[in-house]
Image (cartoon, rainbow, N blue to C red):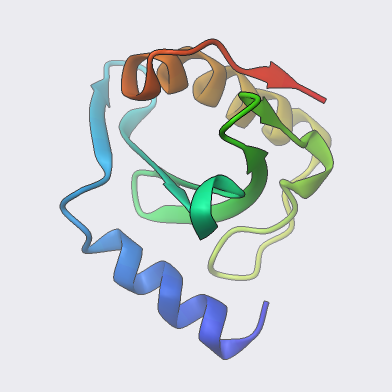
Length: 101
């Protein structure tokens, strides 16, 4: 992740147009489609990432979930948890079911 991406993630953390949810198990969850519907900003409490999505087709690429904004690699088990959270909250924010590819 380069410095421009890190700066953009920090800006998104302060963006009040992102959909925000309070989950009893996971805490604060925020979602926002970016890059004209080709990216999804996902925030879980104080950590954030950007993954590849097709908002038009409601499809998310599992392989695009790689690193948190602090540079920490996301392992397979954590990736599955992230996908579960996104799959649960995406329809609440965008009114369409999400397919994981």
